[in-house]
Length: 254
Ligand SMILES: Nc1nc2c(ncn2[C@@H]2O[C@H](COP(=O)(O)OP(=O)(O)OP(=O)(O)O)[C@@H](O)[C@H]2O)c(=O)[nH]1
Ligand SMILES: [Mg+2]
Image 1 (cartoon, helix red, strand yellow):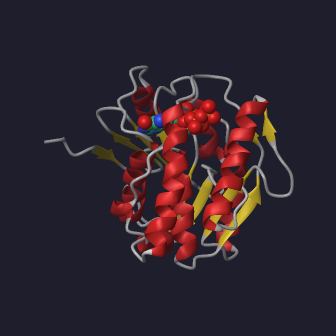
Image 2 (cartoon, helix red, strand yellow):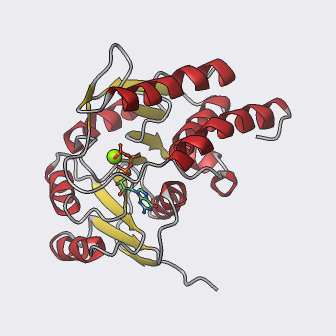
């Protein structure tokens, strides 16, 4: 049987507090600076890293920082690389159990600027149930991506909107903030996607449950350190997942 993941604090609970969940696989070059930037933000935002046994020692670096911020940094360690979606689900469950009200997602590779986190949290405080950090609302803001990658990402939005009518420009946005009630209302164990389609699925389920989804303009910058985990399998998963979501929804089985 698979061992239960080691969960180390934050133990502190508070109804109005915010946490950012950061999935990592081989992000040793990024994670210390990233967590430090989160710790330096106003509003005492906590962080939970979900690491999948990164061979480069990412988890050790997180533990070192936890010594300085024992109440604000948490670490969930999973034995092997199991994908982004299940990493986020593990992080969400932990954040809900710890009582956080604003539960954010952010990549570890600095594609998302940690300094934009308060914008997403503010959007939720102002009435959104799910605030998406969007590259494509009111223009296109992506730095250092090859055109092919931009077309793929933008095209994913056109494709998803055409099939599902989801009224969102950046459907695979991985920089976002949920109110806890959204995560409580979605049956997290039914979410099956693991790659980019995880983001599409979460947004679609939230929207179909009637939650208020807003897009907040952000700039996305291609990573400069570490390696991308993007693959053709991830794109394939997203392409069929959109049809599956629509199909389940039409049959009332979402
Ligand atoms: N825990 C965990 N984290 C993952 C896994 N795959 C990717 N990540 C993390 O998820 C975030 C996004 O992954 P990236 O490699 O940047 O993938 P991407 O952003 O889709 O692709 P690029 O835009 O090319 O960088 C990063 O923080 C990764 O370290 C996984 O299987 N498990
Ligand atoms: Mg990335």
